[in-house]
Length: 77
Image 1 (cartoon, rainbow, N blue to C red):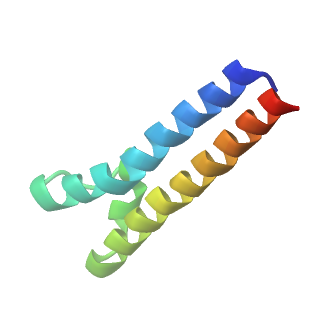
Image 2: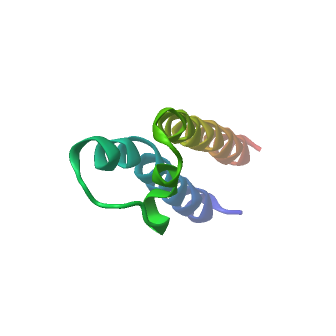
């Protein structure tokens, strides 16, 4: 992949990680809206939705780190 594809994958991963992580928690805490497909963690009961939202953000961060390392390695090699 060239640099543009890595950056696109990183952007999409960032958006998904932020949306399923902190945004899902904010929706749960500060709105009375029910869960939907965009905040899937909110389908879970109270303590588990927060754990899943934090895990989703952590996985997205790990994927971003891998993508950045592969992008940087491609520039060097």
